Length: 410
Image (cartoon, rainbow, N blue to C red; front, side, top):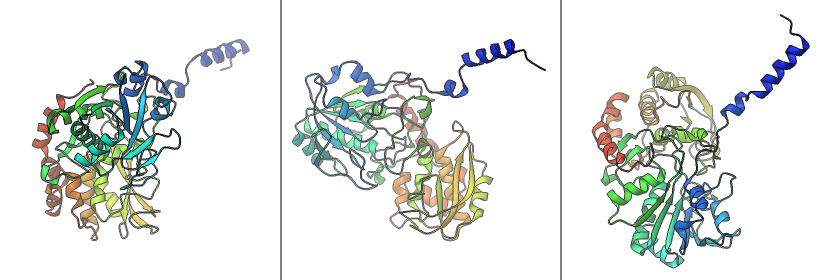
């Protein structure tokens, strides 16, 4: 069929007036973070206050300026201190490290180290800083063992001890807030990767967690105020926000990492590599001597939303540094159906069954990550994936009932 020149021009003009597929899928700047709402309100919550901010590189605006750099020159805000968590305020430290006490070269503000400090020791830091209001703005990734939520908890408790007011600026949960999943921490296993009994994948935002901590877990409530987001839906993944992704820590480079992390971080508790030292941490798992049998066994589980590829890699640091190992790469093809915690358990079960060299870390780190000794003992006893998952059903149901009281968004 031939088109006349006039018909061709008309068709071309009509096509040009339609949005392209790329344009149609571009996220609209509908969501506003807690900081964006704070700034739009003229920082009224901080009016007359001497404020310090607990933050890291994720505390950025839509145009990727850090909130400290935005607030510091603004005469409406009396920002006098910054508090850095694990990895530091500017994010220069690797896992298990921090930046220490220094003066920020960009703003001249004093930066205080909060990492591994709690109780009176952290309260003394807040007192020494001279602030009367502590503000928290850090992007979480939705897993109980990601330490920033326990920095939040420790800072709330320390602010209470020091007589400081506490303000939480909310940000989205990048893996959605649809539901909580996984085992609930048993208090006797409490560490910095889990201070209180919440689910392994909690399905909450930091402001929601702050409300839960204040009502359920702090020894007494702190003077707390939350600045909520607008426009966030619990079912949304990160690419619906229209916000930039800034790695919250060196081994959380992409939202894909966050998607699997609540399950595959469990491999920190084994002698297998969890992919640190590769470009796909927590998506690549393996060890010397592992072959294609593991990927085949994992695929045979029929876990929803995910497939496993036999993979070989050589970590640049951490476990097996510079040595080629075999294992799997996780490929999530349906985010909505994917369950990271069930997937992590399935991978542990099949790794133990297909690789004779499988072992838990000698310090029982797996118990600290899962929140009890149950997962380890059940897998050692030969339990399958469904049996292990069924083991936390009652405690998870109880946590979901508690969690529901503190949800801020529908």
